[in-house]
Each structure stands twice: as structure tokens, then as C-alpha cells.
Image 1: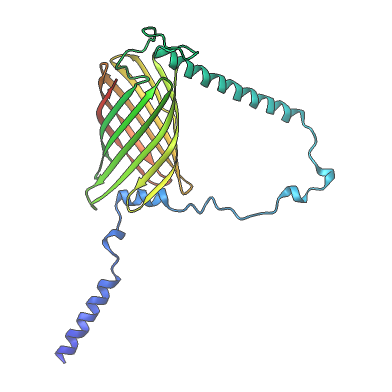
Image 2 (image 1 turned 135 degrees about the vertical axis):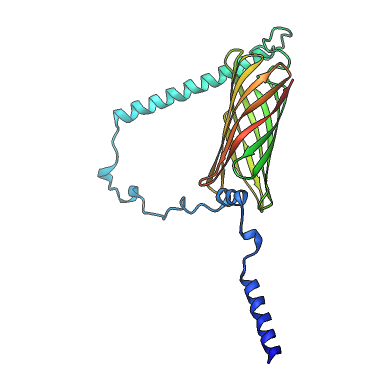
Length: 275
């Protein structure tokens, strides 16, 4: 009788263990962020409806609207203005490195000095971030460029202590770098972002860095970016102050990486080296 009771107890214990979810199911802060940023977005799937154009009779066809024509002309004018500004900003970047608008190098005439923060030929940023909770991150950004043309790769590794998890965010994009005088730089970038945790997910990336360096020893850099993975928007806002000299500076700021319902944010500090 006692043997039957022992066998029954063993079976009950085994059944209870099988019903307990594995430890990986109890995800931490990084696991919650990855799930929120990469899950299929059901909200964007809309049911198909019949087109109103198919229900319109010939007598209901839209007529020419002077207001619509004016609005179209205004939009076209705005696009032309933006295009001219983009072209002028790129031309100013060529001039700053000593190349005229016709592509002819004029050595010694460019206003950019070697080691300046703006329009770097090579730049390396390395930072440590203390994220809210028990998460920390190491961030490395490498940039190559020549005048208005550039490219960057950025890799951020997030580590969590309890539970023991890690997640990597890798950004790769091409940059169009525009100058507005010797103290401003505004870039437009397009590329891809890969989020690697339990799985690898990749989406499109857009960046718009804005850099203001009124002197060689001080600057403010804002690097916003937007990514889309499985129709989920991921916003990255990085604001930092740069103190130092030409070639190397201390960089301190705050970074916030947000998925639709989760966020990884906190202060950061490190070095910025360039040539």
C-alpha cells in the first residue's frame, strides 16, 4: 500500500513539474521590449471595404477645384524649396572640406580643420549607459565620410542581470551630411536596424542627426531615429553634450529607445574620437 502511495506521489510531482512554464517564459525587461517591438502588429490590418469610387455614378465625378489646384501648387513649391535647401547644404559640405561646387579640389581653402566634430572623415563613439532597472548597455558608433557623403554602423548591447538576458540593436545606414556654416550639421540617413534577442528581426531605419558645435570645446548633438519592424514603430532619441578638444571629447547625455509599449532609457557617458 505504501508503494502505491509513493508511486502516486511521484506521478503527481512529475505532472506538476510538466505544467510549470519554462524559466524563459518569465521574461525580464529586455524580453518584454523585444516581444513588444517585434510582434506582428494586428492593429494595422484593416478589413477590406468596397471602394467609394466604384459606387460613384458618372454624374458624381469630381470637378476641377481651384482650391485643390492652389494647394497642389503650394505643395510643389514646398518640395522645390526643400530640394534646393538639401542641394545647398550638400554643396556647403563640399566647400568646408576644400572642394568647390564643380568637384575641383582647392587644397587649403576649406574651413574644416582636422579633428573637428562636424563632417568627420572617421569618427568613433563609445559609451556606457545605465538603463532603468537592472539593465546596462554598451554603445559603439563608427562613422566614415567625405564631405556630404557618409555611412555609419552602430551597435548597442543591452545586458540584464535578473533574469540573465541580453539584446543587441545594430543600425547600418548611409548619410547625406549637410552643413549650415561652420557650426551646424544636419544629416539625413536611411538604412536598416536589426534587433537580436531570442530571435533576429530586421526593419527599415531613418535617422536625422542634428549637431551644433559653437566652439571646438563644446557641442550639442541630437540623434533621433525611427525604425519599423513588423509594422511596429521603434523610436530612438539620443541627446548628448560634448566637451573636450579636437580629435577627442567626453560625451555625456541621455538616450531613450521606445517600442510601442516599452522603453529602455537612461543616462550615458563615454568618449568621441574623430579625424
